Amino acid sequence: MNDKLRIETAVEILNDRLPYQVGELYMGIDEKGYLNITMASISGDLKNISKSSALRELEEITLLFSKMKVASINFKTFAESKRVKYNLNFDYGMSDLRICSEINGLIDWQTDLN
Image (tube, rainbow, N blue to C red):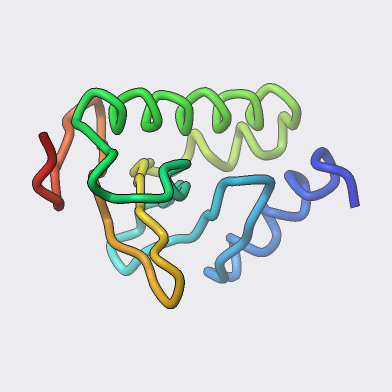
């Protein structure tokens, strides 16, 4: 299935409050109604993640999400009707650790970084 079709399908799945993945982005609606857009850090070691590198990756998440909205007017309409929360996680195998989140330009750090 190509990404455009996956983006279109995302609206149906997310409306049912089920999680969905398109490319590197994992999406879901949380209990507060936020559309969570989450990506795992590219770093293989948490010690190698700094605040500046985390912010660059958070920017990449917002860029990928913007490209999805450009690719599908249906997805854009859906996304613009939601409050959006961007999340950067560190995937350590059996689970993941939230590094930081962004809502309306405000960064919330959940992990201490240099």
